[in-house]
Length: 232
Image: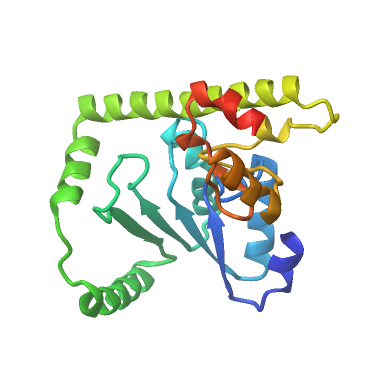
C-alpha cells in the first residue's frame, strides 16, 4: 500500500477507509496510520476518507474517528465522506455528509462553490426526513448518549459473533489451519480466504450466501448460526 501511494503521481487523491475496512476487516494500526500520513504529506496527495462504519469497529465514535482526526491535526487538507446508513440504521434515506477541511478561508470558499456546482444539477434539494432524524439525535444530549450505547452494543455483538465463529471453526477443523484472522479483523466484514469454487459450494450445498471473493458479513450472522457456518 505504501509503495502504491509513493508511486502515485504527486497531488493524487488517495481513498482511505477511516475504520472497519470493507471488505477485508483489516485496519491500519495507529502507528501505520502515521506512516500513511507521512507518505501522503510527502507526495502532496489529498486524503479522501470514506467513513461508512464509524462506531461499528470499536463501539466508540471517537476511537473510530482517530485516523481522520490525526490527519487533520497535522494541518493537512482532508476530505471525509460520512454515511449514516449503517450506524443509524437509515438505509434507503441516503443520509450522509461530505466534510472538507481546507487550508484557508479562501480555499474553503472556493471548495464550497465547487461543491454547490456539483450538487445543484445532481439533486439540488434532497429529501429532508432522514437528515432531520440525524439532526435530532446528534443535537439532543440524551438521545446522543443512547445512540452511543446502542452502537457499543452492536459492535460488541459482532465481536461476540467473531469469537463464537473462531471457537467453532477451531474445534471442528483438524487441518491445523490458523483461524485467528477472524479475531484480528474488525467491523462488519471478514475475508474468509475462500475461493470462488468454495464459495459456490457453500451456497449450493449449505445455502450460505456470500460475495464470490469470500467476504462475509458478520453483522448478518447470529450466535445461533455460527456452528452451522463452521460446519459448512
